[in-house]
Length: 191
Image (tube, rainbow, N blue to C red; front, side, top):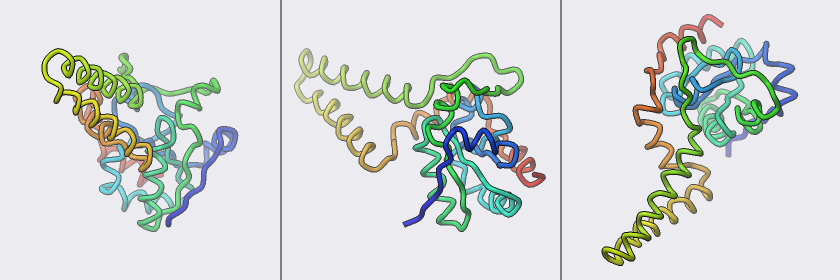
């Protein structure tokens, strides 16, 4: 089993200037506000960035962040499996902002995208409600839709993954701009 360290908000804030911060959220979430100096490498593109992350890890510690800490923990596990030690931020950018710390925004970005967790709650709740309503008014088999979502949520909690978030992250409003991975990796290489 791979392990990683967790930095609390106080530790991360005190050491932010010496850490390479990688934000693994979608470009839309990143645009909605990120830690100062954070580089956006979406979780689904982490494998592509591994060589450059390895190089950055030789220069100093890597801090991986997301909205709440779940995706960054998964990223840290992936990095550890590939020989890169990294830390995650306890509570993610949500906890960072809740403590009153600044979040930065890319230039020219005005509209914030909902956090992925909020999008998942809205989507799951809507599908469950639709399944129940259609199960009562159209055909009882529609209740299976609600049962499927409930089963998916249980699996998500047990495995600490979220298939619905993976699907939602690919929607256009979660990618208001293409993540310029090449530019991000060049910044990562140059320290």
